[in-house]
Image (cartoon, rainbow, N blue to C red; front, side, top):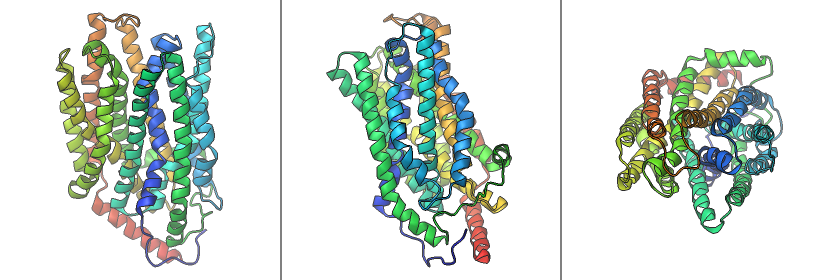
Length: 467
C-alpha cells in the first residue's frame, strides 16, 4: 500500500551506493564466464564426457529455466516483507548459489557415462535455481533504485562493469592457477571454490551497501517497504501473456537474445579458434583482451549514450563488432598480433551489447506500469535472465554439435580441415548474422528519451492523484 507522505526531493545516488550495486553482478559475471569459456572443455577433457553429451548438459538445464525464471520473477513481484520485495531473495540464497557453483567442478568418479551425465545435469539445474533466486531479484533493483533515464544507464554501466570485472578476474585466476597447479581436476576445483566464495561476498556487499538507499528511495516514492504493486491477481500464464503482449519488450528481448548469443558463441569457440586455427599456446590472453578492455569501454558507452542515445550507441558498437567478426574469419594462422588487436577493438561492441539492452529494460517497465497500473519488474527481468542463460547453453550446445559433426578430434594437436572450417565459421559468420539481426530490431525499437520522459510525467501525475 502507499504511504501517506513523500519526501520533497529524490535521494542522491552516491558513489558508494553505485559501487555496491555494481558489486552484486560480480558473481554472476564470474560464474557465467567460467562456464562459458571452460565448462565444455572441462566436461570433455577432465570429466570424460563426449562433446555432444557435454553440450546437452546445460541445454537440459535451460528447459527447466523456462519455468524456473518466470516463476521466481512472479514470486519476487508478490513478496511483501519489511526488507522489500527483492532483498530477502538475494540475501537468503547467496550462500547456496556459491556452494552449488563449486559442485559443477567436481568429478564424482563415476565410470558410467550415463551416471556422469546425470550428475552434471542435476548439479547444473540446482545451481541455476539459486542463480535465479539470487540474481534475478538483484537485476530488478535497477528499476527500483532510480526512475531517472540517464541514471539507469549509469547504474547499468556500474553493474556490467563489475560483471565484466568478475568475468576477467576468473580468467586471470585460471591463468595463475594453471601455472601453480599441475593437475587439471584440482585446477577446476580451486577455481570453483574461489568463484563461490567471491560470489557470496560480493552479493552481501551489494545488500548492505544499497539497502539504506533503497529505503530512502521508497520514502521518496511514497511507499512502504512491504509495498507490492502485484497483488497476486494474475496467474502464471497470464503474467507470461503480459510480457509477450508488450510490444517494446519484444524488441528488448530480441535485441538482447541476438547480442548475448553472439557473445556466448564467440566465447565458447575462442579456445578452439586460438589453439587449433591460430596456433597459440594459450587462449586466456585473447579472452582477457576482449573482456578486460570492455570494462574501460563501459565508461565510454555511458558518455556516448548521453550524446547519441542508446540506439545510436548500439548501432555504433555493433557495427564495429561486425567488422571485427569478418576480419576474424579471414585471419590466417600465426597472425597473433592482428588477433590481439581485433580483440581490443571488439571490446567496444561487447560493452554496448551488455549496456544497451539492460539500460532500456526499465523504460519498458515504466510503460507497462502506465498501461496496466502494476509494476512487474520481476517478470520482465526474469525473461532477460532466462535469455542470458539460454544464450550460454545454446552457444555451448551449438559449438559442441559443430565440433562433433565436423570430425573434431579431442586428443589431436592438429585438426582436419572440416573441423577447422567449422571453428572459423562459428568465430565469424555466425556471430555476425546474429549481430545484424539485433541491429535491425534496434532500428525499430519504439521508446526514445522523449517518450520515456512523457511516460514518467504521466506516472507522476497518476501517483499524485492517488495520494
